[in-house]
Amino acid sequence: MLHILLFAVLLGFWALLSGELDWADTHNRYLMICGIVSCALVTLLVRRVGFIDKEGPALRMALKMIPYMFWLAWQTVVSAWQVAREVWRPKLAVDPSMTTAPYTFKHELTVAIYANSITLTPGTLTVSIDTEKRSMGIHQLTPGGEAGLKEMHDQVARLEPSGAAATQEPGP
Amino acid sequence: MELALEIGVWFCLAVGSFFSLTAAVGVVRFPDFYTRTHPAGKNDTVALAMFCAAMLLECFRYDYGVLVGGRVVLMAMFMIMASPIAAHAIASAAWADGLRPWKKGEPRR
Image (tube, rainbow over all chains, first blue to last red):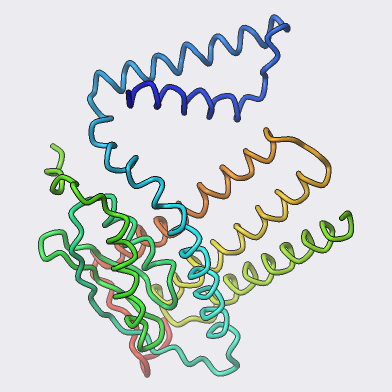
């Protein structure tokens, strides 16, 4: 089932990038057949590697991602505005410091989303991720940047599918 | 309608240019590597998103269709996702290499 979906997404992606969709034209027909064949080939290879089994949780997250994306977009604009204020201040007043943010996510993907979101929110930048202690090192531009992190952690935790498997073991 | 689109395009371009310029000035003004990564990672993301929004509006205006507009959306999504990852990647490399963050009162680096 997931493989059919992957094939459909690949076809759509290919069609969007190619744009040559006139079946009557022989040259376009050749290109389209090439596209279909390569999409099928990629799907078969992915199936053989067994890569798609790990992507299941990501798919279940996809719908919940949409409102989160809007929220994050707004946070990014606020963040850029705050940095801009610091940049244009006549006398530079940045007071950077390091802080840590613990996290409780089970999935690699949610951890990555959280790290990415921290980088995009006001005055904070993810510098290091410690998967054993389950916390991130954060560099902040001005003091008090960690105030919004708790709220963000809850937002990201809501994305995580409830019956999700534990973190995957690291690769070879 | 035409006028509204024109105003929208110019607004997006103006805001995007402002943030792009801010990122450049920030990289020059800020005191050390980590603080410089902030404007480079954030303001550039917003600037690119605004430029892509302007391009999307132009696609509507000249009726370029789904193919061109869809490519613009894909480009915007990729850049919005890639830019914080790049910022994190270089910051994490600097951290792993042992570069200490600048503290207030120290000389600029």
